[in-house]
Length: 109
Length: 114
Image 1 (cartoon, rainbow over the protein chains, first blue to last red):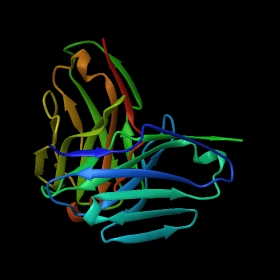
Image 2 (image 1 turned 90 degrees about the vertical axis):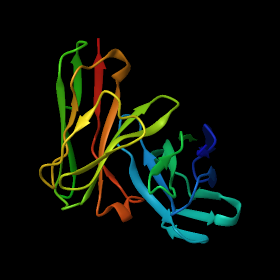
Image 3 (image 1 turned 120 degrees about the horizontal axis):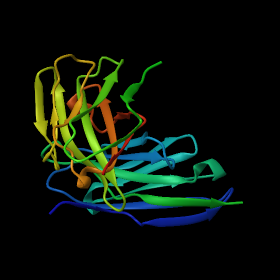
Image 4 (image 1 turned 180 degrees about the vertical axis):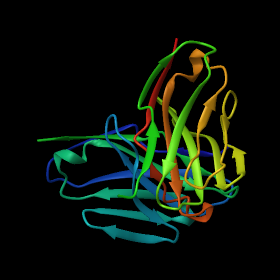
């Protein structure tokens, strides 16, 4: 079957760096995306990797290794407002976008 | 402002009473989709539409209907709601189906079916 695995929860302190991993098992692959969702809010798009390597957008970076079926989201200089759930999503060979179950990030002062 | 608008935001209803959740986007996007979000299960796709008059089932379509008569609107219809449809629903859109990795979500509709 198809699956995306990410840790259920991660904690860190303000100013720190945190990495949220995502491993996927899908039939076909057309890119890995990351979304942020605050409690009670809508998912918002953060980053997208179609090819191997690192994509940087401000404090957030995303990495992809297609040979390892693995990616991660890197959050630097953590702020309290980064406390949220983070979802990875893969567009598979059937052209569906499959979401992981999410990683809850708690940032402490 | 570019956005996806869902209504209502909150809805409490009873089993069997037909309801419609509206979704509208002002970005001229071709691709629209409905998801439900349940604790521990992430986002699961209900139905999607690649363009006007083109709709297809997602992973959990049972008990739902959709229509796409206009590009901007994609309503979700529950003909006979049941308690297992109590959930948080999101409408989303992307420029085209090829760009579905980048989707814009509405604020969500929290539905309770008693």
